[in-house]
Length: 130
Image (tube, rainbow, N blue to C red; front, side):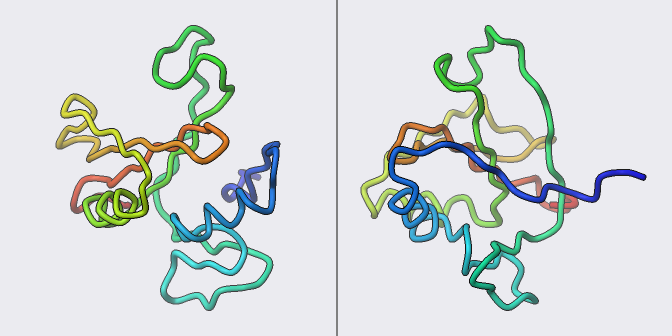
């Protein structure tokens, strides 16, 4: 029987409450949020919209994300330009590079949460299953 999808992402934080609030306020994820307009938010869960999910271990020496971090979160978004505008207005540094984008994979941007964890924002190509 196959796994149906991700059930959660758990990671250590210096200040879990403040970091949860940052994710909720700036990215609209975490308990009480819903990325699926058909689902009413729950006080316990973030309801993510179904779609593609990349599960890919990287070589230990990768330069795709920070060498001192074991992971990088990738979040699928529907309006990357709008999210970049909102994050920038909130004083959050956003990095984009033309070489990250392609018609086959979509558009990407990167930010860091207040504890330095890398977050890749991904807008899949138009017409994809995203």
